[in-house]
Image (cartoon, rainbow, N blue to C red; front, side, top):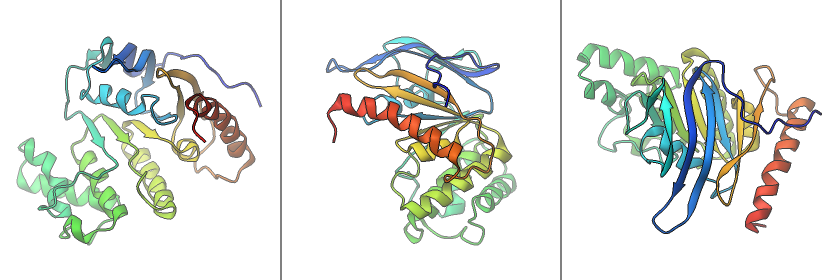
Length: 264
């Protein structure tokens, strides 16, 4: 197959622009060095790479949780200075309120925005149905499986109607079968909602199944190693030769970075 592109190309219409960002922590460790990237509106981008390459740090910068030591991040042309409801975040740990039902968790964002009660309920019911949880609205997190909790977290994020959805290994703690089911659900929801999604993952297969763009990150320090446009049509089959060939090529890129770390 053709050599993978290794340059960062400007998106036709950038929703997010990352301009020369670096991050050095107080202990002297440089997590990111001069990272630049443009992400198109309504795109689905996966950040891929080994532990320690700065994926979550970069996601935190877009969210506004982390301020770079150099460079800047812009959303809709405005520098990110802190967290915003327009940038929803879904974590691996679910982060649900245990004292609220599934419905109450999803209603929370609209409640904070002082939406009328009827509107909050309509939104929550709609998004719970969208993630396949109709009939489970009155259950508390302790009564839900891990996959169901993550569905609630995704519904809660969408109910806030953010233009950007940031997902930090949201399916990493799930068993393989549940993970694949939620990947399919996530893709279906994104195709309906058309948000700009940035999704952190360690899984090459997951990134190729979901994303229209995969950003492979290098480590020591974190930089961009390659940007791959995934032109495979949806629905994607993991057993298709074109999928397997692209997976093999990206695996080689990631393995180069794993070898740097001395991980076996």
